[in-house]
Length: 99
Image (cartoon, rainbow, N blue to C red; front, top):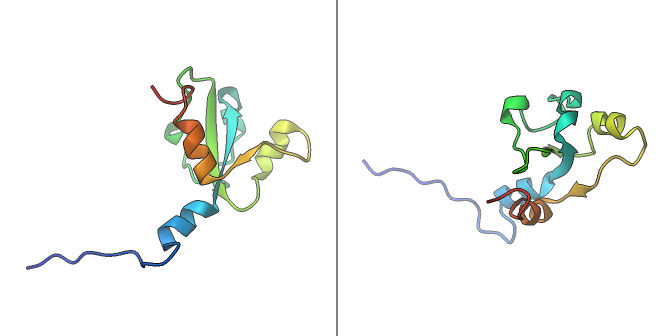
């Protein structure tokens, strides 16, 4: 019996690429993890978080606007710097995050 393969549409931007582009990232200090509302981000719990090599930073990923808890952390209306998927890939492949 031949297996069926699923193929993503051949378009300038596939559905998978479009979904990735919708995701935004914000870096947090590791000691701010207790402030994360996991119902507002794509990670499910503290155990699912990734940390920088020195374990001083982590990040959250989400769709839409910055989650409210970020504004509570920063205590302002600006929040934290957002990164696109491509920007974040470049950052996370840098010396702070990758051996």
